[in-house]
Image (spheres, rainbow, N blue to C red):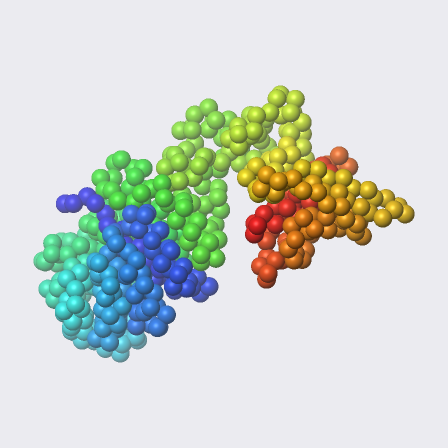
Length: 498
Ligand code: KIV
Ligand code: ZN
């Protein structure tokens, strides 16, 4: 038996059905192209009969995808299949995915019908779809709760009618892994023409068993899996693409593989999360923020000595730059130094001691210490070197009974220019001087100064939001001199549109 497992990604169909996850056509094309670079075999990209928007997205994705098969969903009706066929017109390789509910609950309550009638409708739909493409997939909705003997009859009939892939969805996520595996095995052993089609899994995660069920499906004869990035999908979601891909990669004792390009996993996960505005839970396997984070001192020490002590996946293999030795108040100097080395910041022993003291104060108050915090602790501002505008000099005069004045010298694209201005305080004066040099209409929308730890020798963090021509730009900086930090943050924000 072939040992490649085909990946049908349904992020753009089952995933996109989730309330709040809707994408516009441009976003769908971007995601479909990214899934192509990930190496998925089939992209299920919509349900064309459901709305003109969905129809149009399938049309545009079909024009933009080269390698993967482009698949459109339909119910078992001629009008749905017509819509799928038309939407797939431009696809280089196309699949119609049609089907009907087969469990007694669906037959009785959804269709008010009989088992015999459902088989007739299924066969008619597959035959009709085969008039437009040789690649027809049939789904037996709620197969998870369909009696095996009847399911085998349905599957035999649709393969005879021309289905080339047969999808066995556990639509409600009710099956246990043992049950689901046995269902696939039953079909392998009891459908006489099963060798003429590929069996597909489609598992939902209502009881947290989607990945386990999918794996059991593979071990019992399925050769296609229907999955989504980050496991998004109806209710508790679908099987996660990244989990199945990494199980098959990591476990050498499971003799199956996918063509997923593992190093693109993390990038795709971030894209889905950002486009769909759906955060990934921090402890999500493979792609969660903490998936490679070691936080206890004992684990950190072990991983720094040998990654294999606590890591079964090299994070680099899924596109995460390095394992995160998570920093907390329990971390030692070795972990802190590891992070500064990673950021390319080399510290003398004295500097490391000073940074460590500040770090502990911060870690007591802030659970999640990130790279920006680390840079702030040692007074390094990100992206400064690459900006077109840089602060060369700043002097302010202020105090009781004096008019605040600021002189600012900027390097703009290599040219030094200087301006002086007054204001209602040193920051206002300095901003006015910068504005004279930039000569754009800029409105400060938000301005926030925070101390990083405590004490008057502390580093101040400045977050700023400015508005220019109706757009909002964000800037950030940190310095022990809060007027300097403010001007740097202002310039950081301005640099985003200049
Ligand atoms: O969960 C399900 O049964 C489905 C089918 C439409 C394939 O998503
Ligand atoms: Zn589904």
